[in-house]
Length: 119
Image 1: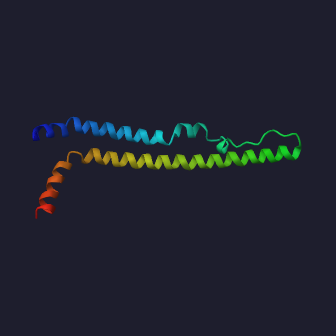
Image 2 (image 1 turned 135 degrees about the horizontal axis):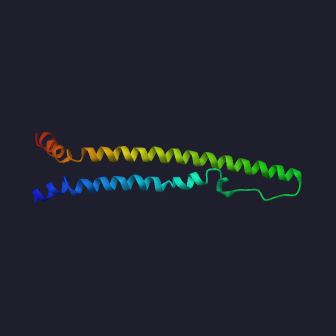
Image 3 (image 1 turned 45 degrees about the vertical axis):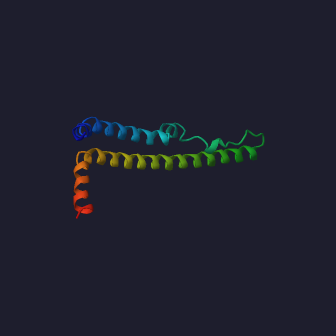
């Protein structure tokens, strides 16, 4: 049983961890829908737009409302993209650390068992 664990840990297990890390990074990117955020970067916030009007004052007020709505939408999406990049980078960094430390984890577990639990 120990030999099976050993071959799994340093073979299939290690490649599964790498696959899961890659899927997790892609999942975070998809969770934030970064592609959609870029495509809709200049869309009005929550699609709030003023309807067309007939008087000059109403037209100017509508243009200002639409410009403010687009400005708000732009900045909300920019901050969401920044958050997505930051969280995706953190996920990737911790994933790479896990992949690098994967071979050492069994030895670390034994070391902690001998030094901490069984003094």
